[in-house]
Each structure stands twice: as structure tokens, then as C-alpha cells.
Length: 193
Ligand code: GRF
Image (tube, rainbow, N blue to C red):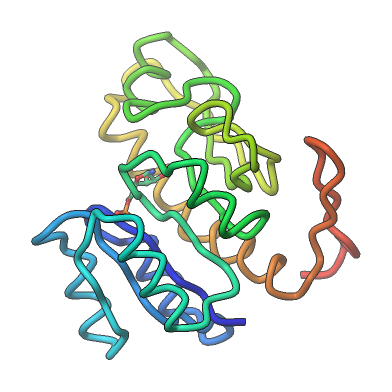
């Protein structure tokens, strides 16, 4: 299955997908000009577009016959029309254990709140798209936070988890191993890698 990746920044998670030989990253869209992630796409000879226009983004994804859209540090909120177009086929990565700490400052919010455990969530964007960072949860992994850690330290350790968790979720999706029932996602043959 061909995968389209939407980014806005550094693109280290995009890199993790590119580096996974089992994942076919067909194209990359960056909502920001100058995002480092674009260079990563170019270095891997992957078609890249800079656009914050949804119609243009959708046309580019469709031209590349993408079966799955991955939001990897994409800082824009998608419209219901876009979500509908790729219904059930959009994965989002978020640096907290949702539903705790949605939004753009998840790591800082969690540390400021004094949590002892935070983590990473990969979830599907639901059709209703009722709230930011909602939608059926595919994978989560927890991380303990110590008192002395600054948000940037926690973010760095969360990134290591993200680089493992996101490719795994993409594999599961592409292999048809995710069974969604309402808010709940069953991973078929969970004991397999
Ligand atoms: C990640 O922490 C992701 O969870 C968040 O934005 C960050 C993107 O990092 N939504 P990168 O651009 O993949 O390095």
C-alpha cells in the first residue's frame, strides 16, 4: 500500500517511515515552506509538495494513489471534507497518552501538570472529527517522567518511542490487521510482530 505523509516540521518521524524498507512512502506534503522534512523526502527521491491548501494536497495524494495518509507532526487541523475523503485511512501521531493532553503543546502541558507517566499515541482520525486528537486509538506506549526532566528532555525520549510506534502502526494498517469497532481497535493476531 502506498503511503502519503503530511508534515510541518523536522520530519524525524517521516524519516523513520522512509527508513523502514517495508513501508512505501509515495509522497510527502509539508504545510510549511522550509520544513526540514522536505529535504528528507528529496534525499530519498520521494515526490514532495509544499502546500497548506487542502484541495491541492488531496489532488497530490490522489495522483500518487495513496491508500493511507499519515499525519507525522502535521500542524494543521483538517476539514471534515478532507477527513471524509480519506475516511478511516488517516493515522495521526500524538506525543501524549490521549485523551490526556490533546493539542499542540502536549509535552509541555503534561510536564507542567506534573504527570509521572506520559507517552505516545497513534490513532485514526474519525469521520466526525469532533475534536483535535480524538479518534480510535491504534497503539500507545507509556513513558515514566522524573521530577527533574524538562519538557525538551521528555520530548526527546518520546521521539524515540514515536520512531518505533508509528512505523508499527503503519505496518498493521497496511496489512489489514486493524479492526475498528466504534472507538475500539482490535489488532488482529496481536502476538505477531
Ligand atoms: C512529534 O512529536 C509528533 O508527535 C508531533 O510533532 C512531532 C513531529 O516531530 N505531533 P518530527 O517532525 O517527526 O520530528
